[in-house]
Each structure stands twice: as C-alpha cells, then as structure tokens.
Image (cartoon, rainbow, N blue to C red; front, top):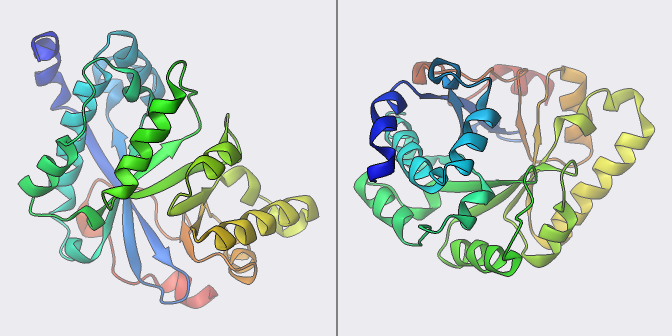
Length: 255
C-alpha cells in the first residue's frame, strides 16, 4: 500500500450516493446501487477521469478495495440492509492489475457482518480488457461460483455485451437508458428491448430497466415483462441513507 499513502487521506473525501432498485410488481426496494461522488474534490473532471488515472498509476485494485470497504460500510447503515443487495460497479480493468487477488471480498463482507448474497457486482462494457480475456472470464465465473450476484451494466452500448452474455450467464442484465428514452414512441427500441428481456429470461437472468424518468417509460417496461426499475422517476441518487424508502408510491401508482 506504499504507493497509495499520499492518496489515503484524500480518499476520505469520497462518498457514495445510493439509488434504489425497485421490484415493479411488489413495489418494494430490493437493492441499492452505490454511485461514487466527490471525485471533483480530488481534482478530477469526473468519475471516469478518476478511475482512468488510478488505472494508469497501477493503483486501481488498491483503490477499489478501499472504496468497496467504504460502500459496504455505508450500506450496513440502511435499516433493512440484510434483506437488500448492494450493487457495486466493478471496473473490469482491475483484473489487469498485477496485485489483483481473489478472496478480499469475502474478508470485507465478513468484516461488515454481511453475506455473499448481499453483494452484486456490476460489470460495465465501458472498458475492453486489453490482455487475458480468458482470465477475466475465469474470474467472473469464480465470483459467480462463490455465490456473488453478477450484473452486466449498460447492456447493449459497449464493447461486448452479447459476448459476455454468451461466455457466462449473468444473474442480472441492466438495460441502458439509451434504449428506454423515448421508447413509448419508438417501435425500433421496443423491438430491441423486448428481445433483450425475452433473451434474458430464456437464460435465467433478471432484468433491470435503468434510467427510467417518465411514468410512460415505466408502464411500457412493465408491459414488456421487465421485473425491476431504477431511475429518477423512482428516486435520484442520494448520499443521505434516510432517503431510501422500503416502498415507492410512484411505482405503486404506475404499476
């Protein structure tokens, strides 16, 4: 951790906002996604710039473990956290780090009195692993075999969503906002989203419609068989854990 010494104090400035993920049928919150905040206070343009810098410095894995610990700690402050999942974004480039090792996550969840089923790793398509794609598949399969939930984030917008879907069946597919924005009046988007939902169900994966902002979008997603919803319509990300509700009336009203 020597290379990280100068960053530890500054990393204390970082925080997580939680955004609820709600079951459309029961209207209950089943999970929260942890979204990193305050990277601009460390001098970075945005979150992507921050993680790119950590990757280039070879600190990505060390920083991720510290952030994972911080997110889990905050998650345990939620009143019903034992019945919820924490969706945590995993930058797949950390698998390229020379110091990457397995087993750390188990240590962290035990530290916070949690179980493996309380954590779901989101794998984004934003970055393509430059080397050792085989290792990535093995590592993701390892997480899944150990009982961790795995989700493909931003599905359909990145490098290899369908290939990831083929190589290992995720537990969850998160349909990107791009395909849901304006879906009510866009037959092409309806066809694509319907196909994704049907494919996911055939493979045994759950589907989250993310980025939902309008009641009409939620209604269409429900009609197409989407099971879970996330977005500004339900609630914007909040750093105040007291903002997270167990049931959301807007989903109850629409669904």
